Image (cartoon, rainbow, N blue to C red; front, top):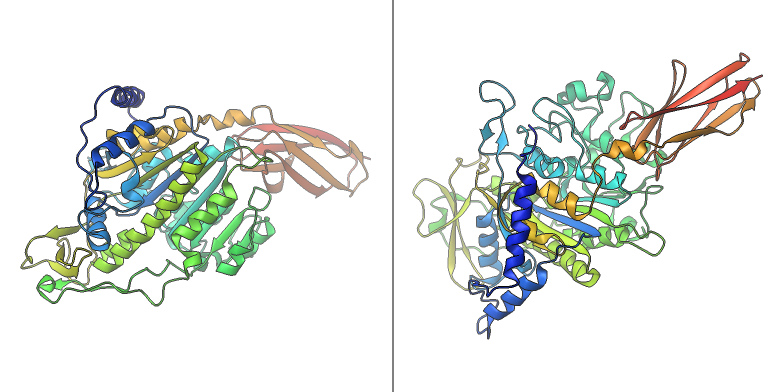
Length: 557
């Protein structure tokens, strides 16, 4: 399903409406930043006016709180800072709006029609590619066609890129930027659900394998288990994905000390940091909601003894990623970075109030780190949003049949949280509500009002002034051979250049494949043994993504 044609008109209207705010007196709801604030109205008005910047952004940081609906934000705020308090990151972004999150049905009589309650795969695909798709799909449309992602497009345009999550890096939200599969569970080469997407079946490969092909400059999260699997086909068949990553020039790190030792990340030496077999442990120890639980003694959240050290917190990973991606004198290009706080959703599914609160607070600290950089940099757009809503609700009295928990908040009073979409032991459901999106920096005014999740793709792409026709970026590709005349059986090297729109190129001599080569800053090389039969030969280099083919000839004597 293609994006609505009204997107550009909606954008113009939003920006124009936002611009009017600078010339009029704003009526802004009271914001009690702290008890006794002298004039929160004036502070808020000034912040909003200052934030309306229409110039292009050099960098974009997109932060996703998975499952972080308005209720989840409010639960965390009440508990950690009190009802009149503010989450220092999430609530600090001055320009806010809401967006719709529905997915669409893949097939049957309702094909293409709204599916009101989406999953993280469909919602992530929406902002990553600008299209609506079905639940379970990773950056493919309802007909299975892959669509380019923001990360892929940004990379083709010469920007540095990053993908950070507290989940397995193969999980839906981080996966939508780096892979294209029909089933979100296609984590590694051992996954049966990969089906036609498996390399052995002629597909693009599992999410982990595609991640290595997409080659973000910085990838940080969990998910070591899938990288211990062995490739079944392709140039690295028989090697584990960790071994493949090392062979392809990745800096592979698996602990805090290893990450601390990394001081640069680029296409020649991208960083792959995977710190846990699966998802990260949560910040707070779990609570268990029960039927009638909110009538029991209220609880106070406690630290999870299994939590990773703070130098692997989401805030620390975000700070590290920014430090590795930010422009320098040697590389003045900007960057696109996606950061996910993954387990707000996972603990909401588990009806674990303290779990989801801790993950929201953890996420908020990452937002603070992004904002601190953006304010100092002055040319960075920060967007904070969620993929979908979830089921926790703040209630006045204990529901007779739903699961619930009582907590003592920062106000010293009791807050009752209810989960009513599944029984004990079952997974709570997502909800179809619209969710908050907030922004700071150039282009942030585009989130004001009601938009759709797919609009986020255009907000980011337009703010970065990305050329989305990436195939054209390889239109002037070239190839050259190191020696025009070689001896039979000699070593030959073919160099390809100007393949900016591609991430890999494929080489061949006639019908003989030479394999693939990673494109590094538009260039790639093939080294092979010359034929033993004298004659004139042609080597063809083809962009795997653009389809651009160039040939060069050499003679064997």
